[in-house]
Image (cartoon, rainbow, N blue to C red):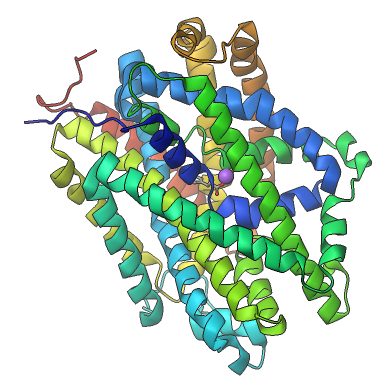
Length: 501
Ligand code: PHE
Ligand code: NA
């Protein structure tokens, strides 16, 4: 008993949901620092080249596969070629790993909205960093897996998962579209207010100068170009199975390429805005500390949970800055988490041939349980760090590389997919797209992957013990591949639509 496959009610809702997926934590806490580190204003050049030559072409590849074969990643790939199914399960498992720790970060950010009002970190003698590590996460000194629970993190994580389960059960239109229709406008309004407020802080101009001043010499450094390409794959959520899944819910006669450009540039616009807001705030922080912007500039967890709380304490109306900043992280994170989970839900729904509700519950509840067992613990931060480094920076590069090789050189499907993309699209693709996906794509991805593997082997990640990286880094990466192979051999249910066009 399977039900009809849902489609997004309108093109607008598809675009909104795809932007919701693309605009995530990376836009807010990753892009500003990557750009600053890699040439400042001059980074715009490799960044634009990476978007046009790799990001958007790969986004179109995802759209073409999902829309042409109308299935979750494993089903769509399988319909393209029986042997490609395993690639889809690999993406499903990568999404699983990301989902279990993404929920933790969203929960922290939600708590920090509240702390921005109470200024909870001011009671710790070491300020924001002491509060985050000791009082809030209660991080243990030993790097291991303790299962030592921290109640004040468990509860908000549980709430995040409850909200997420409700959205996922409700389905593509009543759940995903609606959540994005509420969260995205909220995110944009909050973020614009935040950026305007930041720009008027004293010292903001120094931050903006640091961010925009171009260092053209950086353009001669291959690492700068690799950073641009690496960031854009991550930022557009390509090669995760996410865009394959979402585009499989687009109506048959859809403008695929036009939608893709809108999504890509909306994502970039948001990143640029974040760069302005974040560096304006860092300029203020530097002025207060009597130091240079370079000394206070960071990214990721350090930026969000240590630098920003400091800014919140020092700025006039700092509480408002905090609520807007952490609220933005929550909404940006939730809409991305939903898209990651949909990859998993859709895959199992297809394979089992079940209805939406039971399929969602059978998938999301175990994922939520694993997340709730591993991360609200005194060692959750270590796990999160290692898993993120391996899956996000390394797993997706490997996955993207295999994807372009399989669909390009391997199966020779690019001409067919280009034809599909062009059928109802406003912007037509020519030979250029096939060259970019089939040639430039594998070359750029291969180069970055080799670099990444080398650096992972050379330095024990974050100085963690070798066994820890061995188990939760390399071991997990290997387990994902073995798991994907096993899942691809599990037979499809009789109810699944495996043989439908
Ligand atoms: N694209 C998101 C960002 O820029 C990150 C993301 C990666 C979201 C993978 C979902 C899956 O933050
Ligand atoms: Na992004």
